[in-house]
Length: 89
Image 1 (cartoon, rainbow, N blue to C red):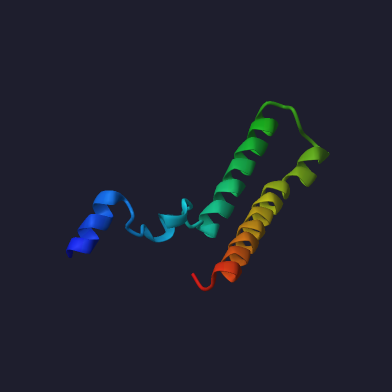
Image 2: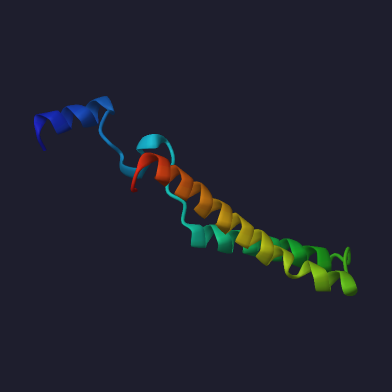
């Protein structure tokens, strides 16, 4: 390690990769599956507690997948907009 690198590490001015801007990269696949999982667990809880039933379940089942897809599209769009402004990632 050079003297300059050591100084940067000690003073906290060293580049921290993707964390340098105070943000970490988003794994879109994990985001989508996490939103889908939470949606399905919430739907299961509604069905198990008899809050919804019958024909209501038919139109509620696609909602977690639609929400997860929307979250994925939003994450990709926001990442692309940020990358387009700052250059290639």
